[in-house]
Length: 138
Image (tube, rainbow, N blue to C red):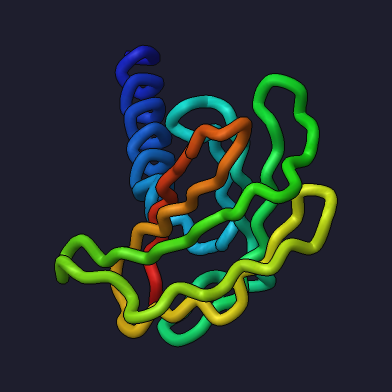
């Protein structure tokens, strides 16, 4: 009898935890980080608030995966795509280099609410590394 109550309690608690977690892609804050597909560049993206429908200013940090050194002169690129609608934003912002591996992408336009993919690219040692981050925009 004691184990029956324990089992019920454990299943109830586990169910509540799983239900409360939600999808990992539905995280609303703007912070994302990951190594690029070639594992050359470590990309970090952040903003002062969650991404919203309209324009967003993104801070980007680029560091070498091998040495953790900041990457300057990386000529980063940014593109937003909305897979459900099979289209991207109309214009990608010009990325400004701030120094010490920091960059600013001002005015990234996300014209509708929904799931967006932000594709970033950067050059390191004549190789182009890239990464994709997913955002649920409200």
